[in-house]
Length: 303
Length: 332
Image (cartoon, rainbow over all chains, first blue to last red; front, side, top):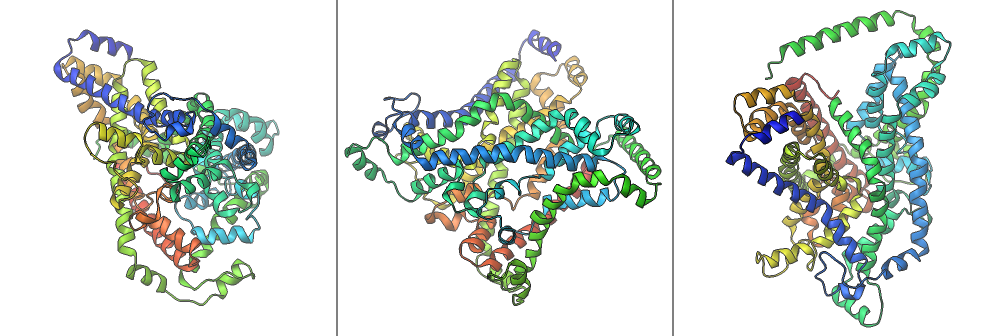
């Protein structure tokens, strides 16, 4: 590639290439601005003094620094509890899902599995057809999963798409490896735990990343299947704040609050809460994005 | 469509070879194989539990769409099979009342989404391919799929902030004298379709761009070198080499998108909509949810959901069939 690039450089750039360069820079700059700036905008509003923010016109830098909104929301017991729920469902849900998914993937990767085709079809079919939300809710209710922590874990403990990724990965391993282990007297359990798990670490990291992000980001299951306050993850608290914003919180109302000496407004709370939920993702983002790209590429190859 | 005969021949040969292999393995008697594979079944057990209870048990609810279901304390299955049968009544009711407006919203949202989210990742991938500096390339790429990682709740919060009457977008539009007064984005129905289309594109463009970049990275550099010898400039190379070679990928993603045309999102609508524009924001999924779960018309909500599932399933099967014809490699 680099050889090609120097060859291109050497050539006198003609007009169409120069236009192409300009267009390219404009488009990519637009992409970067459109994806990053909204986060920055929310961030500076969240650390700006709430009363001052009402004047508007905050674009690039905060005018009057204030962390009142953060300290306000971090002093609410419901919010602190919700952090615990979010962390718990991610920490418990991810390893469970990786284990269940990879166990099935190994079993289905064996070409001689009796009924393998039938089981594959049984799982793949669920990717494209489901019973619907109401029956699903009623089944969860029948299983006594409503209002229980396990409603976050059990439905998400498998994903057929992830299973296919892992299965393809295992299928690409040399068959002799498994045969040799079999000759040495290892059974399938031993092969799975001692060979398949360590050897498929890269793809399991990718799948674990998908599950962890899914767990951290989901709110609808908590919204629909739980009602107790102690089971609300951070995303649910954020939805509540969002709904309050949608229904009320006019500017004049906020003005009068500000005049009464309140240092936070519903808007500043909303911004601070948004940032607190986003920051963990942005912090781990540089470390995990490699696995993310890898996962999409593997999926793309399959497609 | 694609004259890649040697490749096709190779896959055919491989497939036949694999069939023969499977046959020789299958020679052992079934009973003995089952016994030998007991641990494999043990490994499958949790996933089987999941697929039966989480996926297949709710499918019994398909019957709910054809009866008049009311939940009591007797438990789900007793209620379901004891409910009076009404046939196609719920479907008839849907077609006679809200079908047209709900379909209009669903199709408007998804077609607008397609209009942006389909070509944009291709353009990004083509531009990224022209970037020489690895660092810049990586930075832009990393930025572009950041929105994919955040939840719709955060995305909705960001959109509400940016598009509010004193938000950045309105200030920019007024600063450029495009409008005199701030636009109330969330008060006018048809705007909502555009907002959802833009939000969907914003969240998914980086993801799809990676798929195209993967396809581009698979292009034989010899093709570009040959074009250079013939005196092609970069624009011509993009037009005559890069685009045609990633055409199968483009086709597949387009067909898949058409297969999913009725699934135009659910969380984003629920979070961004408000009562004043409900007539425009309601799509099949949110409508089924609102009637089925919130208004207590369980059977009606299920019927609408079933209508969507069946049509989507047919579209996906059709899409898969077309993909198979074009590309010799289908999804399943």
